[in-house]
Length: 267
Length: 333
Image (cartoon, rainbow over all chains, first blue to last red; front, side, top):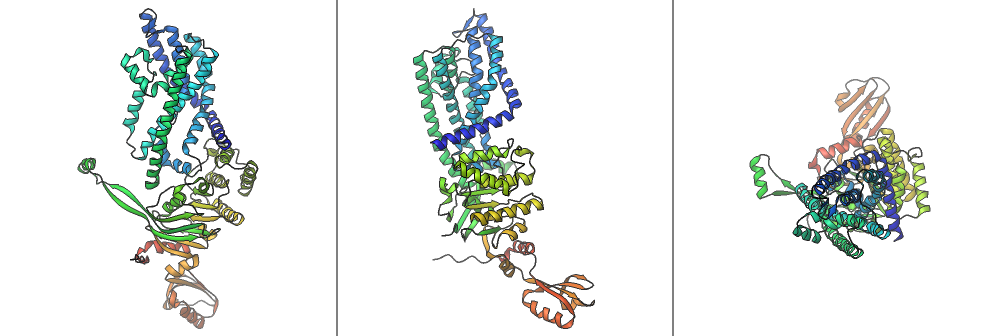
């Protein structure tokens, strides 16, 4: 156990060092990413103002809170893209990983978790600017902040396992671009990334509740902006745990088959 | 027990076959055709603990495939492979902790960070005791003369420096078996020599087993008394380097230095080089002593040397004449 903690700390440290090396690129990437929620926010605030100040149960300053927290959740949600597997196999990076006496999943999990430390540090000044410009209605309690921290990492784990497993399809075929795009489109619509789900029809909200996307994205946002009671938050964290376990199980099964395939046909 | 045991090892790849053109392209949508390529064809050999063996063969001979099977990266289709008593394809933690595979064209160090950061990470990957790890790390840094380099980002190192760094990283857990796949590729002669010296030294100090592939014969000659030659996946030769010449070189060279210039040396055989007082003959292996006697009898000879052809030439000849491959042994019935 201590060995694994040391392993995670080691990789996490390496990720922090590496991402600090790329700090300028990271900042530009982050600033580029901010454009997306700012556009959504301006559009929906305009709609809200046109409808007397409220849209889908969100007042203008609540929408601002939603999209400011959105920027942090989006950064926390960045995990290994499924597209990376093709390059990983072709470049021999996977072979290097497989020669190590540790499952490659741990490497990625530790690396991306370490990256988040840098992401959060870089996000803070951006959040300050967004708060100053858009005046969000954000006044969380200590309990909400603590539960938000849990939900934030829960969202990270759900998306990490989902995309890690999706990427493993590359072991069978490299023509999976369309499948990946389909996944990302579904995620965009059903996670609360494009719009809060309360702005969607009821049946969409029902479907979204049964899928993992919402629990990785909108749920963490709502824990902090005060739209959920403690009971709802705890139930949501339960859903996150369920999807994490499902993701982990799927990853384990698909990885075993992928490895068998890789060791049969080579890199 | 040998450190490496290979018996009838076989590996086939299934590769898609498709002709060019629209028609073939459409046809492949309905029915894909494949053909089997045998990369490793029933090869057998043992490597004793502490032995250094050169693994020779042209591109596509099956060398890297064999090394990948032995390091657990590929699953064989037939036969047996055992390394340190482990079946590599099971990839047990203990097995992976006792071997290393260094591929000259692959990197495992973080590109933008000093190698020291990757070294330190190695400790947690292999769960090494801190004091022992630090001792090994400092020793490797010293032996490979990396002192001034470990704090520079890897991207700023020369190819030779990077390769030494990769080797140091691969040995931090003190593996008992080293699979070295073209470790000196692209390096200048000085860097090649230093790397060879280091591998020889590591073998002596640790008693490590080394299986080395290289296109540079100097690597093999300097490090390995024994070589295994494979071609088209089949084992052509397994034995000493000198025996390789005896097995595959049909001729030797005789070089004589004369006291006075001589003419008409060509009537003694094929002269491949001639100076006023010196000549080199290529002679069939079976006629070497007869020609040497005649030359000594007919001329005032100051010096005479009989040599096997250079090992590069022997190897080239082996690969150029696949007809000389030994016939496969009959299957037991």
